[in-house]
Image 1 (cartoon, helix red, strand yellow):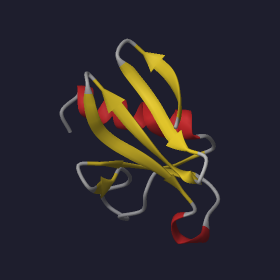
Image 2: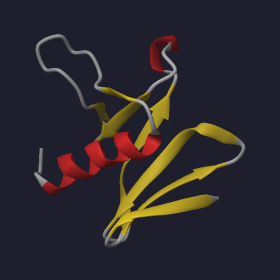
Image 3: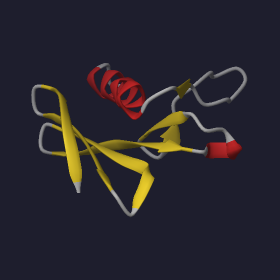
Length: 82
């Protein structure tokens, strides 16, 4: 498992065996994950509390160019208690 820190007590961690899924941990526990390739798109989607974060009206996931950007979306959802 490799990881990168993107804020106090926040880590984005993944496995080399499955580079398309990364866990987002914060404050000592998993708060969500990011995943690439949803619906065949090579961008990253954010998942929090088992649901994609995205547009409520269209039900389309918000897509990001990197796992770090998607992880920041998970972090914001957690901190804002969405």
